[in-house]
Image (cartoon, rainbow, N blue to C red; front, side, top):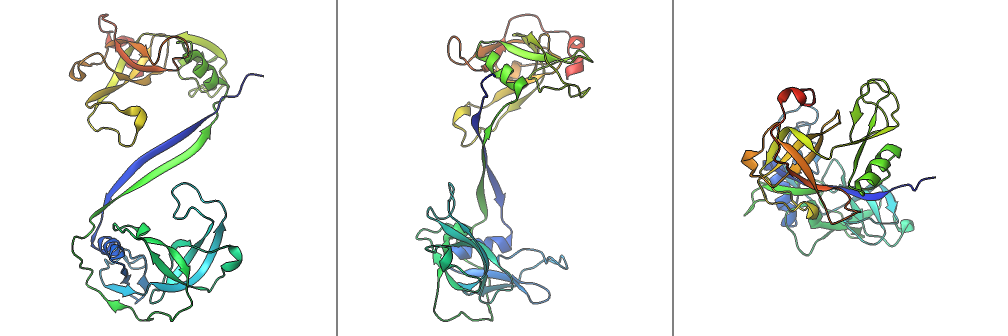
Length: 321
């Protein structure tokens, strides 16, 4: 049986968004150790606040301050915290109804074990030592045996000095990818500086990278066909925004990313074009791969560069545009 390939794969990007007046006031308030909610048309106080009434869809702006103490309404124990979670020791996920609020806030409770957590227990906010205007300004909740806060929230203008107007939320997905038979053969061929696709037994088209089945006919593919290494640029785009937080894509902008139809393939794959000024890249440009590393085990083409051949005629690749 052939070796099963597997590798960790991380998909990560920063999500940047601007804030409206209600969300801005809420996050700026956390920075100032103040918890704000918003009152709806029927008088319910929502914490966290939203900008539109979930029932009437009317715009909301009646901000109020609620207490930093509250009651656990439900919880779940997390025995093995993961990377970037609020605490690095076992904790409870909790929904807390803060005193004066009509809804619950999701956060974490620092407790010695699940036996120390119960629905109905009283808790209070433990503030972060350094606060920036984010939900993480609440470090966690902790058990609290003191007096409850006021049940009637106090009106608040929502005005603070130097308000928070935008946030950056990192999105990340970690998983282990195991390719199937067709993709494994494709990856192993790349280590030999070869590009291998598979031919559909019905329509006879050659697909690169192979998926193990024809996307047009829906039948299994097994016949391997070596294609390229040269190909033709079918379409392309000029990238002007540098990739953020991506160590393996530290490429100066602008650069060109293109769909490339390798000779003998019936599906264009994508790759970076280099060795030519970005404003001279064009449809029909003939290119060849430049491999990473040296010798066998190069793994994959780092980019494609012009071959110096005459441009391909449009009719030879128009079906792949």
